[in-house]
Image 1 (tube, rainbow, N blue to C red):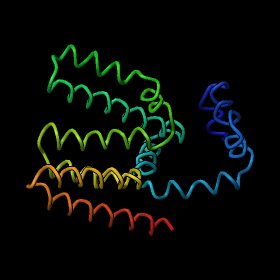
Image 2: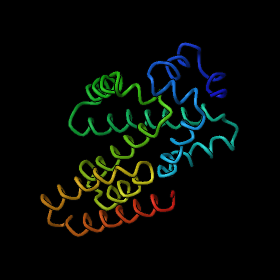
Image 3: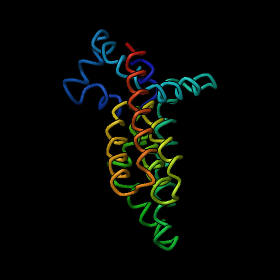
Length: 193
C-alpha cells in the first residue's frame, strides 16, 4: 500500500483503504491481502500487461491504471465505430461520448482491475462478429478473453449459443471456440494453482 499512498491523492487513498470493512482489512492485514493475490494469477493478460509497462519504467500503480485507461479509450473507440454503422458520425460521436461518460463506464478507467480490459475485449469480439462479419476473428478474440478474465467463459457460452441458434454457418466455429475457451480456462486455473 506504500506504492499506492505515494501514487494517489489522500482522499482517493482513504477511499481505497477505509471506505468498507473489506478495504480496511486489506489495507491493515498483509496476510488477508496476500490471500487475494492468487485471484489475479488466473487473469493472465492483466498482470502481464502491467509487467511490460513496469519494465519500461511505469510504477505498479501507474501500470495498472494505464492498462485500464487504454482499455477505456478502446471501449470509446469501439462504441463510436459500432454506432457509425447505423448513425451519422456526429450522432455516433455524441452517443459514444454519452455512454463512455456514464459513471459506471467512466469508473472503469479509474480502477486497478482487469474490468476495463475485459469489457474492451468482449466489446471488440462482439463488434467483429456482428458488425464487421468477421466470425472467426471475433471468436478468437472472445476465446483469448479467457486470459483476461476466466469467467468470460460465460459470455463465450452465451455467444456460442446465440450463434449456433441463429447462424447455421457459425455452429461448428462456435462449438470449437467454446471448447477452446473451456480448455484455456481449465488450463489457466490449473496452472495458477
